[in-house]
Amino acid sequence: MRIPDSAHFSHPWRIHALAPDFRLEDVWALPTPGGPDDLPRLVRQMTSGNGRFSGATRALFALRWKLGSLLGWDRPGSGVGARVRTLRDRLPADLRAAPPGPGFRALPLTPVYLTDHEWAAEVANRTVHAVMHIGWVTDESGGHRGQMAVLVKPNGLFGRAYMAAIRPLRHLIVDPALMRMIGRAWKNQSQNQSQNRAEDQNRAKDQNRAEGHRAIPRRES
Image (cartoon, rainbow, N blue to C red; front, side):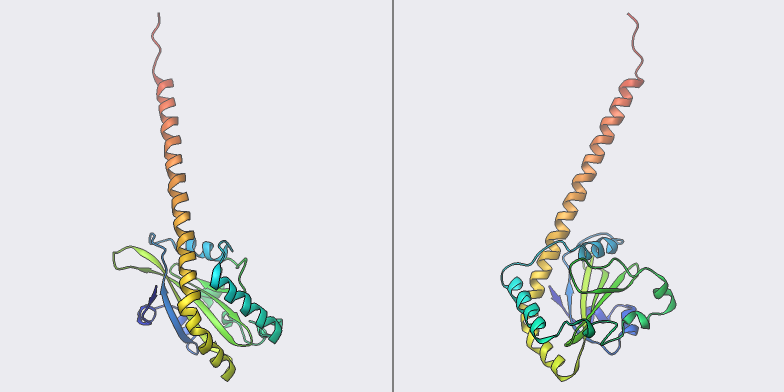
């Protein structure tokens, strides 16, 4: 669900210093309950390319890519490293030296940096230079979950008009569908992990039982 902007600004994220010229568009609590060290698992899930939109969300994305193709919004010269410099050029030495995280299989996003508690990826076209920031935070119950913030730097007046036009569609259709897709994938992965742990425990019990039987001396007749 969407949460107040303060949920992003209240954390000492590295992205604050790296992208002060970007505007915070919105913040979302991700349905990904987990342990304190589960950010890498979420990063792997979000870059895997698994999961597909359906219905209205799928139609909106199809329309967006069609318009982008017709109007040249997504031409190679409009992206990161061409129209805009990558945020990796702004990284301090410690972040630049660390792996930025895995690449995306299905989305035109490029990872920027990865730490124990946050991850950022960027995308650019003729309309905007945007950052998806994922933080791993403590929730109200004392557990942990992911938190997504979208930061944008529109490309001039047209970019600002474009962001204003798509904002209602993002908030009402696209982002809620994304939250549901992330939650389903996380839940399925958690169930698979629980099942695998149970199977490993059963195999270990069977092995211990078999070893116990072999250790019992046979009585001589």
